[in-house]
Length: 102
Image (cartoon, helix red, strand yellow):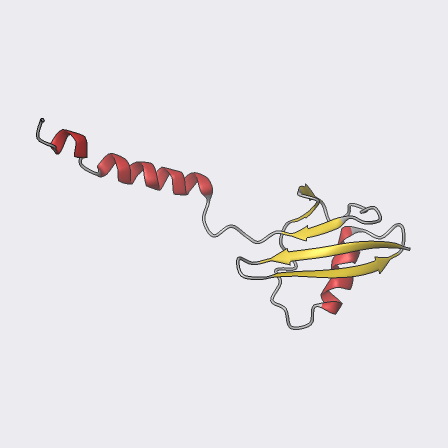
């Protein structure tokens, strides 16, 4: 038997579930065991997962002691957010040019 920890966090709280599983168990099986322990917690069980910060497939076989992370979906696409900020900056009047000379 091996032990793994499943973790999920929101900005205000984090949860972790310790599970024991057979040697050949996959990430999907680990998540099912954690889900059984997490009754009532609103977790996006179908979201992307990773092991120690590295994205992984649910068919991956974690090692003893691995931390399986459930990632929250992004609220906004980072590239699109940057484009929007750039558009706002470009559309704003140039404050330096509007100042009177000293």
